[in-house]
Image (cartoon, rainbow, N blue to C red; front, side, top):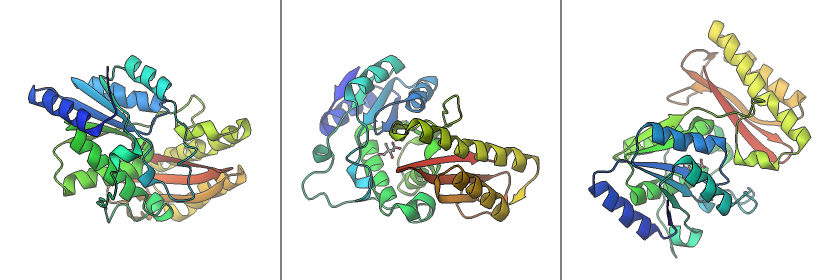
Amino acid sequence: MKIFREPGKLQKWCRARKSAGKKIALVPTMGYLHEGHLSLIAEARRRKADEIVVSVFVNPVQFGPNEDYAKYPRDEKADLAKCRAAGATAVFFPTPSNMYLDRHSTYVVEEDLSKGLCGARRPGHFRGVCTVVAKLFNLAHPDFAVFGQKDYQQAQVVKRMVRDLNFDLDIVVAPIVREPSGLARSSRNTYLSASEREAALVLSRSLAALKAAASASPRPAKSALAKVAAAIEKAGLKVDYVECVDAETLENAKRVASGTCVLVAAYDGKTRLIDNVLI
Ligand code: PAF
């Protein structure tokens, strides 16, 4: 497994592999890898990529000033071992200063799908995501890149960016990987105390209950979402948002019905958790 730290070196290697006719997959991550990330690498393997490039970069540009950039968990040694075991063929560990050179002044802004949900609560977040993802695409020359459904809005925003800017690759979205308890896997779960982890189960449980009910017969969104929000608050979390949107346009839906996505963000103590279900 190759290890790259310099963007230019990764780019040169990927360009050569591509010229040799190899199929390249990119799995962009912020590291502290868990089963969710490993499922993205497995998906790249399943799609018969010859080269699977995993990027591990806690991207400062997508964090707001009061967010957890500094304390975001990092473990390079463990990430390397997990990438190797999962079948990655290259890992890219850049630093903020070699990704963002002095006087970096160019950003990518998606102006439609990024407006609501996490985009409304985390100003500048998707500008940071789009910028780093565009850079990674230019460095790795992937035939396809794999993202997780856990960050549903992110996946839709990246797909739109790829379409709008004519990036020559496919975006693959892999299903959410959950702990046996139902909690969606996230590097941020490591912040949770035992009681917070227990309380967090309300997210997956209330979403699963709503999905089961709405799959049987569509529900009016207002009352259904109020019920989910009330359950979350009752469990001791603080709701950031609970919304039901059209799965493609991310516009608010009036009914929780097939073709919609219900998304939640909530604070469990100081930790902001997100989860979603496609109906
Ligand atoms: O989902 C993430 O981990 C990040 O937002 C990503 C896509 C790696 C960009 O920094």
